[in-house]
Image (tube, rainbow, N blue to C red):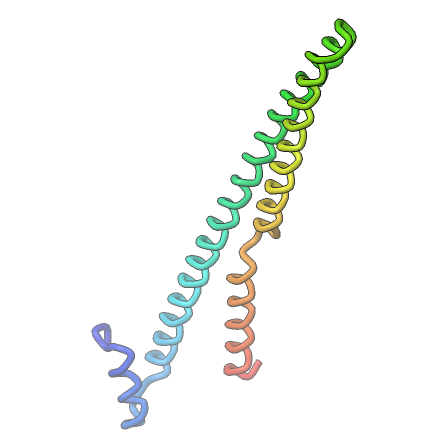
Length: 143
């Protein structure tokens, strides 16, 4: 019986009454093992995708924080230059600082959107698949 395929077993089921309970249990066990392996693979793929989005979001948050530091530094320089002279130098520094802060805000919003795509941090599709499989198994075994 070790070399028997699913079609051989199903053919024997339809054609003859000599299929043992052991054969049926073996077939169910093999199918359950394959099902669990497939669900684990789905979970692995789903977590990899969520991890990629989380990493992108974290990178954009970090870059936004770094640009914010440059913006604050530029605004501090603008305040110093503004006090040192009366107009032109500090006005240009103020415009550059404001532009850097605007860029940091855009990067932070993009990072937040990427982080949201990664939530929740568990493989939702794989869990739902396992729940469906368990429910079908319960229905078919009469439990």
